[in-house]
Every structure is written in C-alpha cells, then in structure tokens.
Length: 382
Image (tube, rainbow, N blue to C red; front, side, top):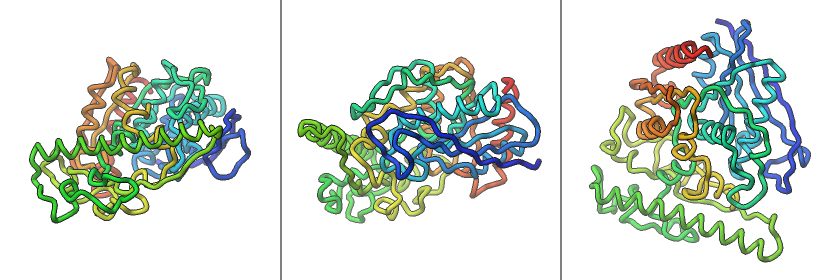
C-alpha cells in the first residue's frame, strides 16, 4: 500500500524562566511532526514519540502505515539532543501534540506507540494525563502538568520498550568508577572490561549482586552531587544558574559480557551501539553529556518520575506489550516487569521470537510484529 508522508509543525506558548534548546523565541515551543498514512480516512491515529524523537523512519512505523493505520511521529523540543532534556517538558510537548492533532486532523482516538525510550514517556504521559500531580521538576523548577489539560490516550503500546531512562542508565552505568573527578581510575574488581577483573563470565551471583549494588550507589552519588550543586547555586542567589558535566562509563552491563545473565536470543558480547567496551566511554554513550536539571529529571535512579514501574499501575486503558527476544537494548525482563505492572484489565503480551531492537538483523520478522499490532488494534476498534 502506498503511503503519504506529511511533515508539519506547530508552536505553543510556554511560561518558563529557563530555556534548554538552541534557537527559537523565548516563551514559545516548536514541535516538529510527521504524519504517515494511507489515502484512506481513519478516526484513530497511532502517536509515536521519544524524548529525543527522530523515529519517523523506524521500520514498524512505516509498516503500520502501509498496513492501513494512520501514524504521527512527534518530536519533542529536544529533537536529537537530550543533554538538557527535562522529561516533564516532553510530557507537555506530547500533550500539545495530541490536542493539535485532534483539532488539525479530527482524530477521535489516540493510541500511544511507545517504542524503546518512548515507552516510558508514553507511560509517564498517560499517568499524568489521568492523574496529574506534578507542578515542579525534580530540580524544583515550575512545570505545571496539573494545569496543562493533558488529554488521556485511548490505548498504550509498549514496543521494544524499557522501564525508563533512569533505570536503564543505572543498569548500564560503570560501577568501577568510584570518583567522578577521576573517571579513568577504575576499580578492577568491578571493571568487566578489564582482563584483571577477578570475576570472569559466567559471573557468580555474588559478583552480580555486588556489581548491581555498586551501579545504584554510583547513580546516587551523582544525584547527591547534582542536588548539592543546585542548592549551592540557589543559596548564592542564582536560582536559574545551571552546570553542565560529563558522565564517563555509562555502557557497562553484565548482560552484554555474560550471556547467562538474563538469557535470550541476543548476540553475546555486543550491545545496540556495537562493542560495549568502546561505547562505554564513546561520545554517544547513554547520558554522556548532562546538566544538573536534566540528570535529576532523566537519569537519577531515585528522582526521575518517568519510571514505568511507577507509572504503569495507573494505566487503565487497553495496553499491548511487545518483546523482541533478540533485543540488545531492551531485554526481556523489562517487558515482563512492565506487563506485570500495568494496571489495565485489558493487557496483552507478545514475544517476537528472534527479533532485534530495530528489525534490522531479521527484517522478515517485521510482518509478524505488524500483524500483532494491527490485530490488537482492530480487535479493540482502534
């Protein structure tokens, strides 16, 4: 089926003292979208989004449009750059997109397509749209989700999704870095990329427990430092000041070096960024560049509110979870934990056996995933 691709954008007014994106007028937010659809008219749209966007060419996005579904990909204000992203503001952008698409195109039903990191954003959005509680970011800056008039979605799909950026960061952060001011002086007993590490795959349960505890401890040390820095800036009479910093070693997970950890169909000794040892300190590693405020909102294990295990229980609309069993990024335990946490009485779980994160290694499995989504939507009148 031929599809029509329609780029469009809109802007809306925002009251905020702080600006985290380059260019544009202060006090206005521009949202870039792509509508992908067949020529037929539909009353339901699948709305994909992600904290840094950029997924309008994902294989499943295109496949759903070719299967007859209307799809919109919404890029929040942080398109392509999450260094200063505030997830509460991504929720506002997603809410503005839903309000706009209903007015602009007349869609009556919206199903959130939560792909990868878009899964936790979708859950965070739906949680706040149905039970708004947030008026400030974790850093204490005003961001009124209570008064935003967020429109709840009619369904939520979690597709190759992880629990949340903060949980994923913590599961991947390198625990061998004990001093952030000396990031390349590492504890060899926790450095899984160091041949001198006394524990080698397959790791003992004791080592894994110690490794995981050290990951949480490091995340919490960075969080405590960020909060102290913000407090000091405010105490000095400069409440809007910000500090930027680098976080080395953010791609270290025993599941990549030991295939016996959470066994699945994934390829051992690699991650979705290639060689995990290289990615651990490479420029595109998770959360490599951050600000005090973005760390607390996005990456902090304790402070970030975009946590699927916290948000999912409030979701009561029909929900679909798809797990790709060879996924190198979002491993099966994330899908299983999210499915268990969902509060909907109508929830469905599907495994796509052998599928990788993007359906690149085995594109022949894409029709299976497409059929699962389309069948689930059609059965519910979407």
